[in-house]
Image (tube, rainbow, N blue to C red; front, top):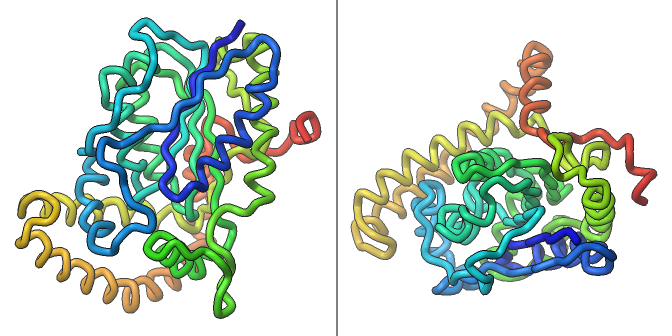
Amino acid sequence: MKRVLAVWYSQSGQLDRVMDRLLAPLRQADGVTLQAVKLAPVTPYPFPWPFWQFMDSFPECVHRDPAPIAQLPLPADAAFDLIIIGYPVWFLSPAAPVTAFLQSEQGRRLVRGKPVVTVTACRNMWLMAQEAVKEMLTDAGARHCDHIALTDRASALATFVTTPRWVLTGRREAFWGFPRAGVSDADINGCDRFGRAIVAGLRSNAEQNATPLLRGLRACEVDDRLIASERVGIRSFRIWGKFLRALGKPGALPRRLALVFYIVFLLTLIITVVPVTMLLKALLRPLLRTRLQALKDHYELPSGSDAGRLNEFV
């Protein structure tokens, strides 16, 4: 009997649907016992997210200083053969409740020495968040064996409008020519292939080896056009986050005033600098092809974007 623990956090409900579909084959499989637990912050995060609370949360998020979460309802000696961790992306970083879990004594004990599959469902920029998760897993002594990345397939320009609208208002339907926000129903429904592959891997004890369980299932595909933007973006968030944290805790007046300046600065940057940067990247892309391919291959590890085994799990 293989024991699997799945933990995740979902603010909008999107990741709940992803995990439900992904875990369905494990729930139905003979020889597999599944413990599924949704992470619960001590003080729940609202959805929709009020604008000022949303913006004021980014310094702690990017600096991995999360608010506490409730302890998982598991025995102190609970042990599992495989751990699955699902998270959304906040400010190019893992959602704070998942950071809290991976930093907690209980979370570190549960993942120590275990193979871990990570799952994210987000806009289209998840690389820096996943690098942070991998770093925390390594620090806890876990073995990261697979990653599943589900993204909104609309253009970066469209999602720059539709995703904040969804987060701040709760409205995700199509409007004014913009598409519906979020991961598509087809992509969410297709998550059961990962669950079936995980079951097959557990039955052959593949989780005990270094080989990914989900290789060949197009689990993790990187858009190399966004790599530079993510790397620059996370550095900016960390610099500004450090400055804002120095002005006080969330809600402090000096911090709130500086946050107003930051928002104006950010909007000005997006309107003026970002279009020029995008043009320069497009012009330089042929010269950077080899470098971009190497980065793409790195960020797609360990599961990769190839589709060689899709027919086995359709």
